Amino acid sequence: MKLSGIIANTGEWLSGSGPHDQIVVSSRVRLARNLKGKPFPGWAKKAERIAVLEEVRGAVEQLPEMKESFSEKLEDLSPLEKQVLVERHLISREHAAKGAGSAVVMNTAQTLSFMINEEDHLRMQAIRAGLQLDEVFAMINQTDTELEDSLDFAFHNDLGYLTACPTNVGTGMRASAMLHLPGLVMSEQVNKIINSVNKIGLAVRGLHGEGTEAMGNLFQVSNQTTLGEAEEEIIGRLNKVIHQILEHEQNARQILLQQRAETLLDQIGRAYGILCHAHSITSKEALNLLSFIKMGVDLGLFPSQSRLQVDELFIETQPAHLQKGLQAVKLGSEERDSLRAALIRAKLKQMQEPEIGKIPITPPTSNTTTSEES
Amino acid sequence: MFCDVCKSKEATVFLTQIVEGKMQKVNLCEGCSKEKGVNDPTGFALADLLLGLGAAQEIEKNPVGIRCPVCGFSQADFKKTGRLGCSACYDAFAEGLSGMLKNMHRGSVHTGKVPAKLASARRRSQELAVLQAGLVKAVKEELFEEAATLRDKIRVLELESEQESSTAAGEPVPMNRITSLPQSLPAAEEAVSAPKPRKKP
Ligand SMILES: [Zn+2]
Ligand SMILES: [Zn+2]
Image (cartoon, rainbow over all chains, first blue to last red; front, side, top):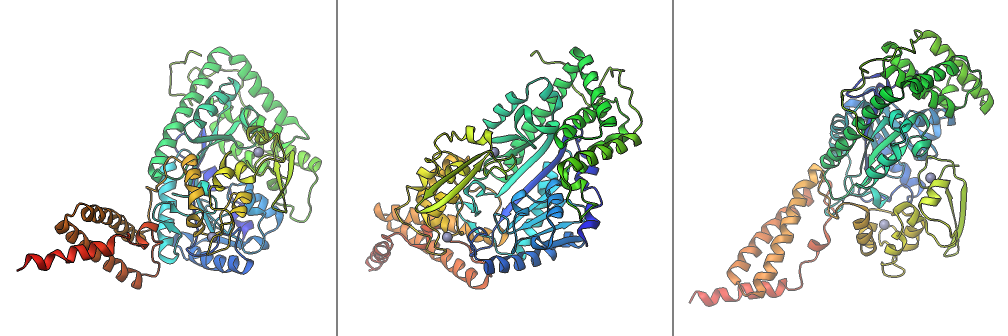
């Protein structure tokens, strides 16, 4: 299967649905594995890396869940194609920078992806829409168990799965959720939340930028530690914290609606106005304004059918996605900014015009009626 | 160019230092350089940045000049990159790693998933460790009957693992403490077998 065929479609994690998917954009679990007795990719010689690549790629392609898949060596992908995969969170930036001896394999639904010879011999991840960490872990755990039959993973009786970096040793697992938190950012509570979550061995960071500077109000919550706890315990802890953040976000939105409704409507309305009429817009401005529109959809100000279109714009306005139809030419940033503006205008034109002005009495996102004293 | 630490923001702070004659470059974003307290561009190691402050110091707890016997990775390489060369490096640099792992994680022993084909071997090696500790104690306290029972159990387990490793494609990475039996074991065997004939007559 060709990459162009896969990236023509939105990934299941974006178009699909899941619990709390208004605030939790996606859930992801990644496992790091290495082959027994082989040097890690960063220290291996080219021939050793290529041998590992062949062995791992063969095993991955044999998996029943990978019957319909895309598999390519990094050296055979164009810089633009690699960047598209990065923007879809299917490979890491580090992996995109790799040359000979590295490969990527993914299924057509884009729910499972495998990076071969990134920092470790194999990094595999499952990703789905909404808050589904347990389901996503079950998926990748099963894949890992199937791979055990054909691959011998480096495993230490005391330290568990061995990884190139000691920060990943043990479970080799990084579980994360991407959250959209405009309410907490607007009410200036987000740094407080970040600090308290960081204290308990979990990390919150902006998807693009830190703290209140996070573009598009998108944050990623993940586990920091991998040794000393079983996979299920780590995910349980993460789930608990995400539910708390969710509740705080819902409360923050509720309070904004009750106390600062005019400001909120003004900002959503202005965002819509600018996006409908701009002819040049940077990625940063676009993400920040789209975040208001996304919240507007959550609050019922926009028809709910617009949700997917808005969510897609978060990805489609990223630099490489903008250019993916134009493989041959590399655009300058000014050209990209006008292309981005045109794309957004066209998409918003398809959407039913919102009724910004009527404040919903009970916003559909909120299931909490009590407002916190703050 | 992206920051070497968070890998998401544009690097604005560029540091260069010479480590053992080799030039090493680190690129950081504003936030990470502040967070890591890099105000002295000459006094840091990448290991500190990637693994947390104090990591380089921990690494230095390894015997000077040590290298991984399997892949040749050196302590300097570890300090420089914050990464290891191969699986065997975890044993080669165990001394420096143990403190670091303790600071970095919530525990020092893996309690999660075990590959199915290694599960029985791992369980056995854990049992063996317990039995061997018991044997040493029994011998010390001159409980020879108990020592004999323990020794027999150990032999059964060892035989099982020998059989399994000769048939299984992937033998487990042995735990350090079971590859070499305690020094006292030969003595224990003598002690265990010696009293037996005396009982019979
Ligand atoms: Zn940084
Ligand atoms: Zn090594």
